[in-house]
Length: 169
Image (cartoon, rainbow, N blue to C red; front, side):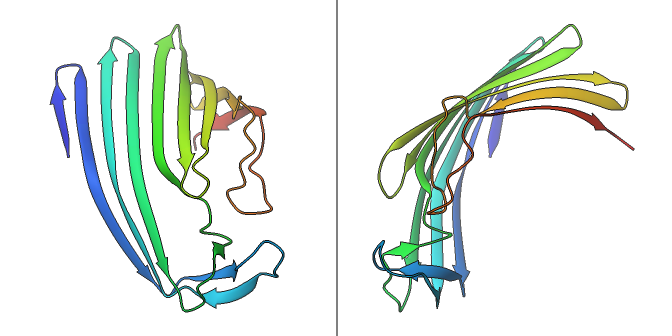
């Protein structure tokens, strides 16, 4: 649901998603091998809130998400490999604007890990320019260089930069 007031918009949503028959790799401790198991059921519940201000080629957004996840399993595994990491709280602030044919955005995001309760900050930058059917862009991702293992043993890419050319058919 979203409500607009002139140059501002506010909204939110409550969500519940139940899945059945999840299969994942599980283990009870770090030194045990991973085994495949039927997790039976996963329940995802949460709340998203957002607000946006727009004015003459400039916009600012704030996004907040609270999420709670529960898994039921006959295995009683302490760790799940692919559903292991989830942020229980996430706050994002996104600012963007257009200047002389260029557009840019800056995203500052903080996630609190639902298992260790650590806060992981992220900073992303994007600059782009449309040239007819073409677009040139540059990205800087994860500029705080947080190495988060969203899947145990596979750390998220640290700081990265990209340059590219996009086109439409």
